[in-house]
Length: 80
Image (cartoon, rainbow, N blue to C red; front, side, top):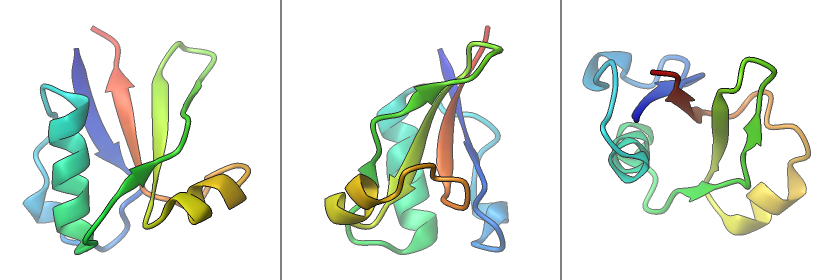
């Protein structure tokens, strides 16, 4: 399985790899590029084309309060 980081905006996109081999590797890279001491992933959802997506938040409170995650950085599981 491969993972990609999306929706980061201007946060040092040049520092990100195209894909990561694990969800944890992608999570650590996203945390580092955003400069956050911690990175919480929301519960995730699946799109109609079967991609799994996890939105990223600074805190668990933010993750619990955000209903849609439309503007947050995210990690996407890529289809093989």
